[in-house]
Length: 286
Image (cartoon, rainbow, N blue to C red; front, side, top):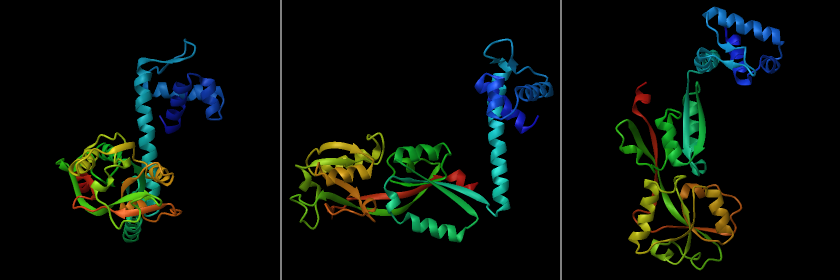
């Protein structure tokens, strides 16, 4: 058994045709058929029922297809790790960050990390907070940066520390009657149309509840026109004068072409968003 035989078998199973599998690998049908026969002989098991058209996998073949795909994945990972080791790479860290946090100081932190640990490769993905939490728990990410919208930090298997406390800012269009103020409170927004910036895709997370309660503490229910975790879309709608929003300060840093936008700090002890770095304790120990 070799890796090519596994790849040929997977192609035959997916195409349900020796001819099409041969075309996929730029081989003759005879060559593909011969390799599959050798694979079956090496295990003394029939993997493919050749009597049916299109061909079908035997029960043993269906089991082996799943295992073959896993073997290919493991082999490719082993090759990648070996090549990385030959280049001096000693590990990989998969980092996830909250949408909008790309405008923060994160890049400077990653640059410093790379200079301190040049042999560790880090990869980055940008997601909503719920997806980040899910990927951390499923081991698809090693570290995440974001607002803890799912109350992830209460879990015993999660470690975290505060990376940044970001001031909340009111985002208004320039002709708005409140745009000339120095700062705003929630009460000032009681008659406004709100474009609600949600930390999660679902819009019903622990984080959403927290921010909605700040309106209730101010004595009113907000008139929410839109819920979204897409900062760019919210800013475009504000620019079009469809409503106003409250955004973490890091989301509006380094913005260009904002001639029609005004950002004012929100007044109040709870008018901030905490960004935490979170990871699995067992991953750190490993």
